[in-house]
Image (cartoon, rainbow, N blue to C red):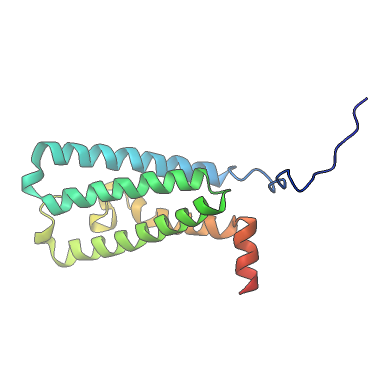
Length: 154
């Protein structure tokens, strides 16, 4: 017969319920699909015709890196460091979509070819515009214990 052992200072505190369920999983899948799409798009654009629109194609590559980072950060967001990285990546994504979307409409000659974020993501059915808002909402509603304590102390 085995007696249950009480948690000690050396064992990790149990994490609240499993974090990646429902909308969290869907969000990670959408971010992963965007990462693959943006990576593929930027790779083809850069390899085939980089001289035609270097700014646009470089921005597509940058968006791919942001989507990759956001995907990984959301997957590992139980850990405080990854949770913070997710916030930074998704806020950067939102600013990028809004800035590049605006500039691409106001000064279209800077974008002779579309990027992932040009026209606020029109080539991707505006998913790049909606996704960061959903990501930030999910992060806010699924704060880590440390972040929750820090937020309530301020």
